Image 1 (cartoon, one colour):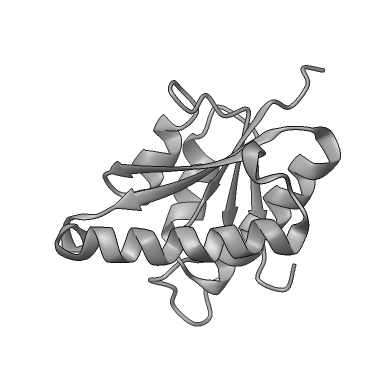
Image 2 (tube, rainbow, N blue to C red; image 1 turned 180 degrees about the vertical axis):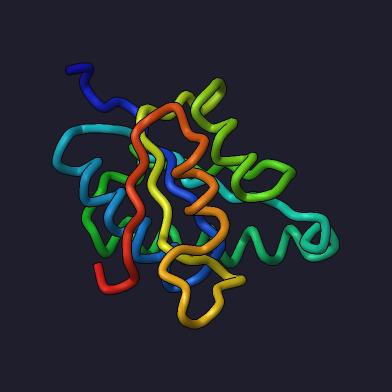
Length: 137
């Protein structure tokens, strides 16, 4: 089995994304991998992108400290597009993820659905292993 080098974790600021980030950081801590926190910048976010990005990055830094991951082993990557497309592209350069981690539902979650549209679509299309972390994790 190829060693795990790079974990991409989707982050949209939702509680599910925070759970996924904690899980990815803990795994990276155990296996010595790098984590790339991936944020998709949608069309409606462009106007406030800097403020939102700064807020999300601060939240992620707090989660890194909480888990005890060396901050040098984590970096932020934002890209234009819908979340699924951005995360699928993260399996290629410059991120080149060996594993993708997402929360079960994101900001647009609907009560009663076990999986959100992004996690569902990723499960159908990703070419690397995918971990979908439930909020309870």
